[in-house]
Image (tube, rainbow, N blue to C red; front, top):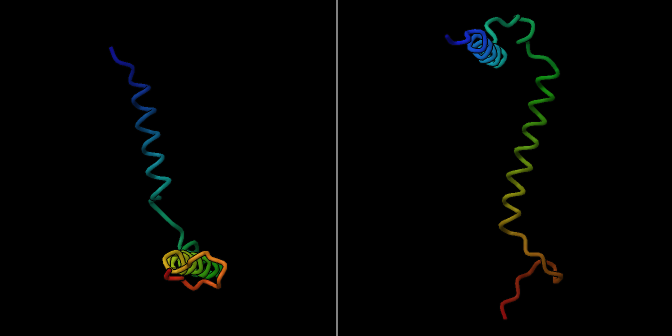
Length: 73
């Protein structure tokens, strides 16, 4: 005879995780565009710009004391 209470607990835990990630109902006031969404979007955009410019700088920057000019000797 198997213990169904542990299976039920595991199933309930997965259901709660899925429900937490994708709730069935959201209040319309929670989806309204507010200052928080705008500030979060600007912060995300600034991080993306910083990562892209950092990658470009990684391929171009030469750390030598002569001002960055590459010497061909």
